[in-house]
Structures are given as C-alpha cells and as structure tokens.
Figure 1 (cartoon, rainbow over the protein chains, first blue to last red):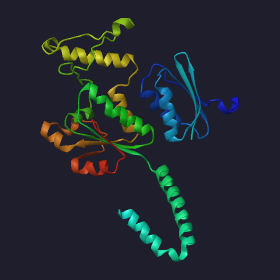
Figure 2 (figure 1 turned 90 degrees about the vertical axis):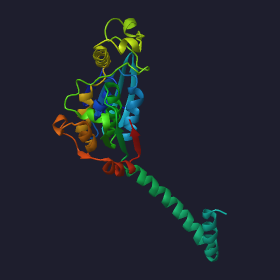
Figure 3 (figure 1 turned 120 degrees about the horizontal axis):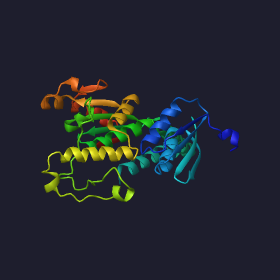
Figure 4 (figure 1 turned 120 degrees about the vertical axis):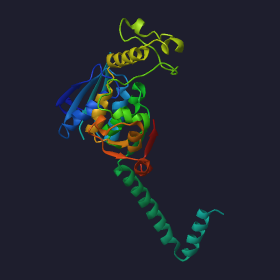
Length: 80
Length: 212
C-alpha cells in the first residue's frame, strides 16, 4: 500500500470516548464520505482494536491499517 | 434406516440406468446448492429483536448500546419496551436512578480525585444505603459522573443515535394503561404502540433475540 493510497480524506478523533461511541461516530463519518475515500480514525479505547476490525468485516469497509501508538489506536478505513 | 438413507436408496434405484448422469447431476446440485446458500447468507441483512424490561440507570444501557451498535453494523433492529423498560422512552430520562440496595454486584466508586481513590470500591452495607434519605440519588449521581468521566455516552445520546439509525422503537400499550402514563410523557419517535402479539412475529424472524 503506497502512501498516496492511504492518504485520508477525513480525520476523526474519538479520544476519550468509550465503547460503543468510537464505532458509532466512525459509522456516521463514513456515511458522509464518498466511496473509495479513506478515513483516519484515532481512538483511546483499547477495545476499538477488535471492534473496528469486526465493524469493517461486517460492513464491508476496508481496514487498511490498524496501529498502536502508546495509548492511541490509529485506523485507516477505506469506505465501501 | 433413517429417512435420508431411504431417500438416497430410492434415488439410486431410480437412476441405476443412467449412473453417469446421476453422478453429474449430484455434483452439479451440490455445487449449485452451496453457491446459492452462500449467496443467500451474504445478501441477508442480519436482524435483532430486543425486549427491554428494566428502567434503572444501569439497565438502561445494554439495550441502547447493543441496538445502536447493531444498527452501525447494518443490522435491522427492533426494541420492544415493556414494564419498567417503558421508562427508557420517557422524554426526560435525567431522573433515572440506580440503587445499591439489593444490588450486591454494583461497585460504589467515586468519580473524582486521583486514580487510587477512584478505584476504591466502597463497602456500603444495605442497612446504610437503604436507610439514609437521598442515598439513591447520590449513588445515581455518582454513576452518571463516573460514566461521563470515562467517556461513556449518556442514555439520551445513545437513544437519539438509535432513533437516527432507524431502530424500531415499539412501546407496550398495556404498560401505559397499567401504570397510568399518558403518551405525552414519551418521546415522539416511537415507531408503534403495540402488544406482545404484534412484536413476537418480528422476533420470530430475527437472527438474534434478547430479553434484557
């Protein structure tokens, strides 16, 4: 995956929010985006590591990357 | 001999004259069947029906968290609010309470101060929590504050998301009559006022059914 393909059209910071808000806000943000564009989502909820993966599997959005940076979890999601 | 073996034997007897054709047919059928089943599973929208029966602050969370999350996953969701669960649909839910009395699994935590202080589970006997006036209000206030400081959504917020996501909000008509509420006490976004007979057919067709 090149950097150009990963470059996010939108960023969403859900730091401080707990389950299920990161998922709900991510879904809402993706709804307002165009197919094929990428959303960068940052969360402080350790549960989001598994939940975002499950969310993407179920909804068909592409999980391009999922990283851990200290207490932050960073996801790149391509809208389906 | 069970029914399936009998059927297989009958099918085999009927097609002995053209064994090759039967083998080909079976192969085609098996492949086609698997393909169709997979296609159906992929195209099906998962569905969930929840029966919400409790109206305290702690029990208000599970139905709204599960419903809003399932809706975010693209599921079709319906909730039937009955008995005390009906209170979850009141316009004003800011007076929702939780009580430590007879609720031994409920931790009593303080929402303020340093982490070591917040993590203490205060051992308060029922004799105290049940007899001091206003204890329930205090416990409810503390739980609300703890949830807020941990970034957990409020009941209003989760309920609004459910409504926006198209979760079916079905209110039990009988409960309104029994407890003497009026429909004005409840939010305007109620999908239907109905009874068990209306909700059960929806639940029957759901993939997930929960009683909370």
